[in-house]
Amino acid sequence: MDVEVLSFLPLLGFVALSVIAWVVTWQCIDQRFRLPLVLYGGTYGLTTVIGSTLLGLFGAPLIDSLEYGLDCSILNDFNSLTYWSILFGPMILVPLGSLYCSKFFVQHPALHGPPSSSGGDSPVNTRQVSVVALGFLYTAFAFYPFLTLLQSGCLDIDTFMAFQGDFSGHILMRTNLIDSHSASFFGIIYTLLPTLSFCALFQWVHRPTVAWRCTFVACCVFTTILNLGTLQKHKALFFLLMLTLGMVELKMVRWKTFLAVALSLFFLLTAMQIWILTAANWSSIETISLLVFRMSTCYPYYINIYPAWQPYIGLDLGLNAVGLGEAPKDNLVVFNFMYPDLIYVQGAATGAAHVRAYAQGGVIFALLTTAVIPLFVTVAANLRKNLRSPLCFAFYMQMLVALYNLANTSLVDTFTSGYGLIWAIIGLSPVWLLSSYLNPTKPHSDPEHRELIGGPTTQSAIHDARSIPKHSSKFLP
Image 1 (tube, one colour):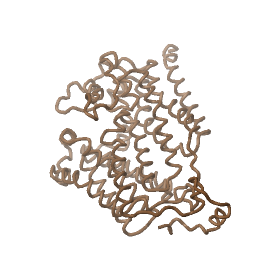
Image 2 (cartoon, helix red, strand yellow):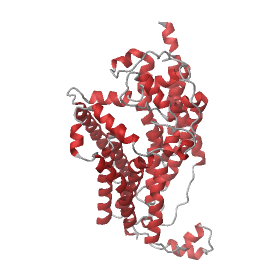
Image 3 (spheres, helix red, strand yellow):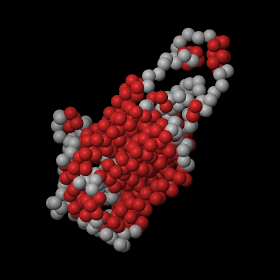
Image 4 (spheres, helix red, strand yellow):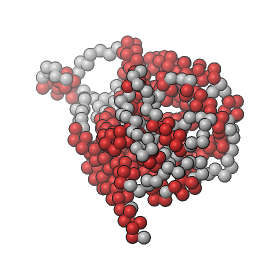
C-alpha cells in the first residue's frame, strides 16, 4: 500500500504546483488577463485534465467502464513522470508565463472622450464599420457555403429527421462533407461569419438602430443554421455561448445571465444527444461524462503510442497550408489505435496543442508549444484593454476562441484550419476597407488629440479642448 501511495507522489506534486501557480497569478496579474486565462484553463481542465487524472488513477478498467469500445491493449503508462508532466504542464506554465508577459502589458493612453461601455477610457468608434459594408460582405461570404449545403441537402429538415437513431449515418455524412470541401469552406462558416456577427453585436450595442438590430439578428440566426448544416452541433452551441460572453464583455448582460445561457445550452446538448441516439436513458450525467472523457480518453493513447509504438512524426510548421509537405497525421494514427476494428470511417483523435506537439517532437516541443500560449493570453488582454471599435472587439472575441481551440487542437490548426485565426483576418479586412470607402472620416481636429500623436499645440488650446462637455457615447456619430 505504501508503494502505491508513493507512486502517486508526482501527481500530488503537480497538483500542488498548479494550485500555487494559479493562486499567485490570480493575485498578481492585471485583471484583464483573468478572463482569457480562465477560458483556456477552464476548457483544458474540463476536457482533458480531470478525465486524464481519473484515468491515471484507475487505469484501463475505467476506460472499459465508459463503454466507448476502445482497445486498451497498448495502454501501459498511466503513472509515469511523462504522463503527469505533459498533462499538468499547461496548468503551471500558462498562468506563470502570462504573469511574466503581463510585465510587457501595453498601457494605452486614454484618448479624450467619453468612456466606452466596455469599461475602457477610450471613445467608441462606431464609424469604423458601415452597416451596408458588413451586410453586403456577410451575404457575399455566406452565399457559397449556403448554396453548397442547400444543394447537398444538409439544410433540409428531412435530412435531420432521418438521422434520428442513425448515429453511424450522421457520422458518415459529416465525414463526406469534410472530405469533399476545402478548409476555406469551413473557415467561412466556423470563423469568418461568427467574426462578422461579433462586429454586428458591437454596433448594435453602441448604435441601437433598427438597421443594426436587424443585421445582428440575421447574422446570428444564419450563422447558427450554417453551423448546424455542417452537422456539428457543438460548433453552433459554442457560437451562441461566445455571443453571450461578448454581451457580458460589452456590459449588455451580467455574468448570471451568461451562466443561465450556459446551463440552457448544456440541457439543449443533452436533448440533442437523446434525439440523435434515441437513448431514453441518456441524462445530464451522461452529458457531463461526455464533456469530461471525450477528449481525455485520447490523452493516454498519445503518451503510450509515442514513441513506444510510433516514432515522433516531426514538427508541424504549417507548410502543408502552402502546398509544401503533408498535414500531420498523429490524430489519425491515434484514432486507429483506439478503434482498430473500425473501418467504415476514418476518425481523428483530438488533443490539446501541446499534446499534439508531443506526438510530433516529444517533451521539448510540447513545452515550447505550451510557452506560446501565454502570448495568446497577452494579446487577448491587450485587446480587452481597448474594446473601442467593432473590429477590435471582433478580433478580441476570436482570440478567446483561439484560446479555446488551443485546448482542443494543434497550434498550427489554431491559425490555418477551418477554425483558424486567419479567417478572422480575411473577414475583417474587407469590412474595414469597404467601410472606409463608404463612410470616410475627416482628420481629427481636436487639439489635444494632435498633442497625443505628436502634433504641435498650446497649453491654452488643450485647456479649451478639455472644457468641451463630454456627451454620452450613444450620441457619437
